[in-house]
Image (cartoon, rainbow, N blue to C red; front, side, top):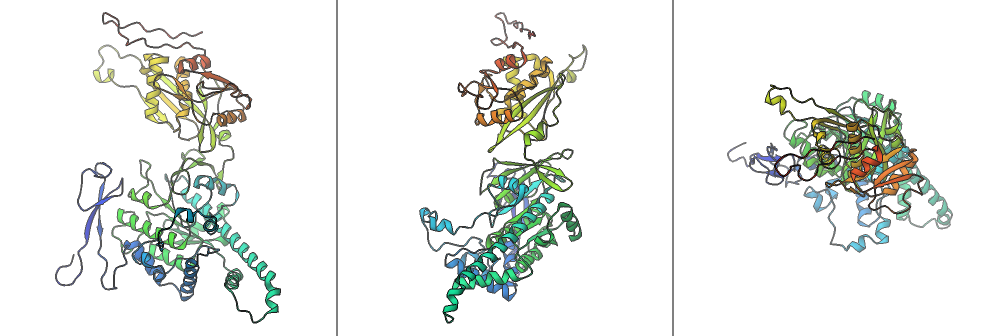
Length: 616
């Protein structure tokens, strides 16, 4: 930092918690906000330059966008002024508005904000009135089956002005999905532009005869709008989508877009790592949407640190948020993930954006699952299922058929089909289990070998839930001998089970491997298991039964609690109702349970003999 009478302020150091995003002026071993240990990273806050007048605030990201808008061509400035007039009159623009100059944004923009301040507080009933709702900007619909699958996760389309973060493991298909979405947005933008032009022609043709009778009549505001729409439609260029990549060249992007079948007339590609250059291209081209691949590879000149650092990721995301909100265009940014599966960079990145999507899938499988982690415009319960093919990601019409398509029915496989529900969509999955009993330690063996705990491995299933089910099985169903086994549970297909309604299927798959007897091939299972071994009811049972009937299952084992007398008749399946997990074991495997009685200790301190598991 400079000293003396130069008038410049020294740079400040701040400490940012990567878990909660809160920053402090001094270092803390434990974050006072979220109580996380050793989560702080230091970053430098450069003082604003005092030679260019009063500071606008907003950080390096907001200032970069302000400079890009100030350098816009005169035609762009005129269009921005017209858009501002329409906003003040309460009219809704037919197309997304461009990034406006900060001189036209009002006091809130001058302070670095991206939301236009209201003139005064308004009643919620006035905002939700039919007149106000008719002027609200609608969501951008995505065409074809791929667009419908993405819309399911987003909650019904892409919201204009939304900042959407897409994360996932390396090679899972994030860039492929983003490029396909960009092609769909470009196709929709072109369709909207053509429809607007046709509507303007129809209006002018309808009133043409009326205007010919009075040639001296002045041109109204609707006539000016029609002239603007027609002049834009007559141009060779129409609204497109800008795909900016900091990882690939334009030739590589063009080759991938050709392989994916993206219409080249609806997409512009740009290879750049300086975010100032990307923002200048946005101001110049006025795209309908923007895709940045990835946020860890771009940087701002005025922000400190290298690309991907805490300060750079924070400022670049803020700049893109300004661009999205002021232009009314959706912005997709791709983020890398860490080894733990979280988005790389500060946790504040997920707080800044409007939507966080995760694309999941195994590298050795073609199935990809798109789930919402955060969504300000809809639910996070819905998921999209895709299949990776040579032509990109293809939506899966029937996920149940895909997940159960490779099911192998042999007596040696302990598998239990189950039905889970994500949002409004039921899935059928196969749960496999394998138990391997450990040999007792030899006499004279070391203590470390004798005390080695059995393995507990779960793929696609929560580890703590597996421990709970094993404890219930040992207490009420199989006896404590199950604890001497290595337990392996796998969810076939790569989908992660987070619904407790699959407890019965996991428990019976483990019991099937323990007693070495296969479950019925025509029976599916669902239900939650309580700590007392009871089966608890789950939501949307009718939808689960219908999905099982669609996949050809004849019987479904489910909890008796909450079931009605004619359960399953409308779906055409036989329902097996059980109160406890022990009853489910007998109904599914024909095996009598073996449980521990009392505390397991006799009156004289001797352990009571355990009942043996009876097989028919």
